[in-house]
Image (cartoon, rainbow, N blue to C red; front, side):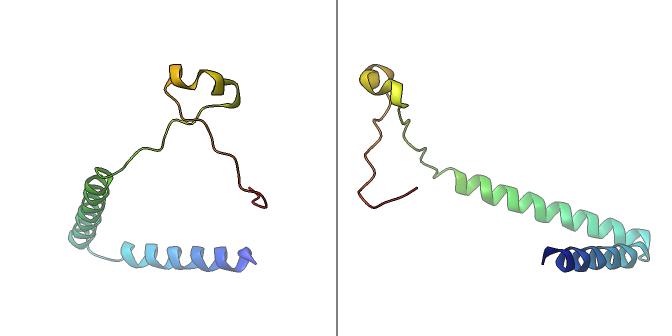
Amino acid sequence: MIGPVVQTDAAVARGLGSAIGMLPPQVKLALLVLALLVGMVACSAAWADYKQYVPSPNVCRADQVARAAQLGCVVPQQVPAGWQR
């Protein structure tokens, strides 16, 4: 199933590579600069969005449950009946 998809992706990449290879150097440089700018904007947006990130609680391991208060970790809750992981 994945074989035809990979072959198609490879063909598209090969076609784009040859198409970009035929462009004049100034246009190649402009495309490179544009790609870098898009990447910088995407990273900046991800960084700005990351500021609202709330870390997950520090969950205790099974051998740490008795010392949870000392270690500052959260005791894991029991899984409801009928729930499977």
